[in-house]
Image (cartoon, rainbow, N blue to C red; front, side, top):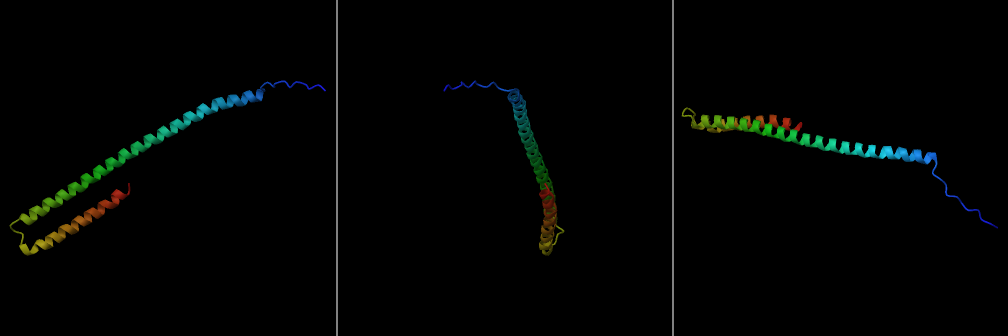
Length: 112
């Protein structure tokens, strides 16, 4: 009995079309992935810059409020017309106003 030799089959048109589709889709998918990753990194950097700028603005606002309160306290306590028994009352008033100011600023900072 004689065996018939098996001919190597040639790639079909379907194989070449599938190969062509892969050759077109893989680079496009790679470029799309790269662009998405780059966009994400840029947006994250922008968000970080905005958060830092907001934090700096809040710190400046708190510093300005504290400086105003401190100067008012210094002027009031250093005044010769301020009676000594009222010093504790004035300090309580300053602490109350400071706590109300800080309580108003904290929710603003938490909304970031």
